[in-house]
Length: 298
Image 1 (cartoon, rainbow, N blue to C red):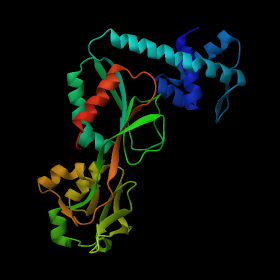
Image 2: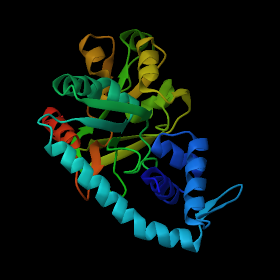
Image 3: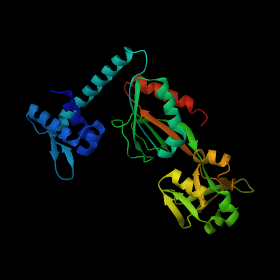
Image 4: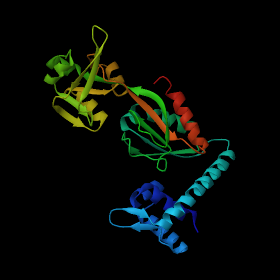
């Protein structure tokens, strides 16, 4: 019996579909099907029920999975721990998921520094997303996300916060004027990053009480890419609400101007998620420690 065949059954049970299991194992679906068939032939039992929509384990398959999964995890943990102890420098593969905006403007330079410092570590970053439901420990070693996170099997370390600010180009403001109150934005062209169509702006009143106004006037441009929205603002097409780290350089170089500084969106935490339980390989522990230190004060 081959261990890869057992890993195939475990991935199918955890992912719930052949396609997702093949993606988690980084193998073609045809290879996954072939390994499962070989395992079933070896055991002489059907382990998985296949139909056009769902994949589920047979009672025998579920029992076999329940007994084998902890054994495989313990074997892989012991093997990784032994490999780590035999090398003085961290080595291994890092599988990372991150939002594209945060990656571009904050994380990628730090990833490059880490890779230069640890030449025996490889990095795979094939999934750029800020969705909270599309990651699992079987797919990624470290996940970066913006916003409150649901409970999961990952440990969550807060590494900073994101503050959205209103910006527009000097040319746009010269032509259309600058708003002084959130209600004034109803008369301006809004540039929104998907799915941030509504803007919540908060300010302290004269009694130091928080007042929040929601801006939901029609959007002139909506794009699921922060850099494209920023460029549209630079080109004078309207007012954008963007994370401070995305527009910091452009504001400093006066390509963009901040607006209504007394009104701001609620800050959103930035989290680094990583494996919570069991043995954590040295290269992953080294990476998470490096990122915590590098992002201190972010």
